[in-house]
Image (cartoon, rainbow, N blue to C red; front, top):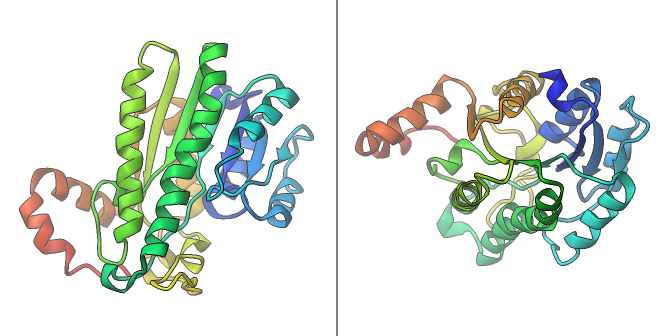
Length: 265
């Protein structure tokens, strides 16, 4: 696995906390040079200060403001000459019923999670095509495979990612560009602290599923192993999340009865 990442130029969004921060630390140990992006410059600098590779760099950006990603991609190319792997990890979650969620919150979640991810991918893709190789990794969710209560816009944004990146993979099948979708279940990170409620304010508390979720370092180890094998899709989570994927695929009617009884908040 380590040889796949050694000496690679890897751009990570959502790198200031949670899965993104853990990815940065693990990839740094594997010998990669990293570009760390998120909105929070101070937290990005904190993460950068923990890394050993002096060539790694922070590049703050907001996935909700995607007009200038071509400029950011050019900055990376000008600095390093190439990008080997793009890891689309940035995004925001949700904890609110659809009937109590404003359209502005729905729009914000889709703008960041879907359109922001697509925009940065499209900014990098021409360089992958020109250099003749690349790997696009997008962190989705098990809610990209099935919807649950309190996640209507979040699930919609993750389902959209699957449609886009499955199509993109088919278009790039002979271009030496891999496309991997990663579907986490519950992972113990601060994501629910910042999850949007119906009026757009953050939840500011950890929900039970997340607090009891998989350790983030364990998750990242499994994720990097799958990426190094250029898997099309990775589902990484506990028994309950994987069982949900199984039931949705093979017993959808039973799944529909089961999902309403599951405590997801």
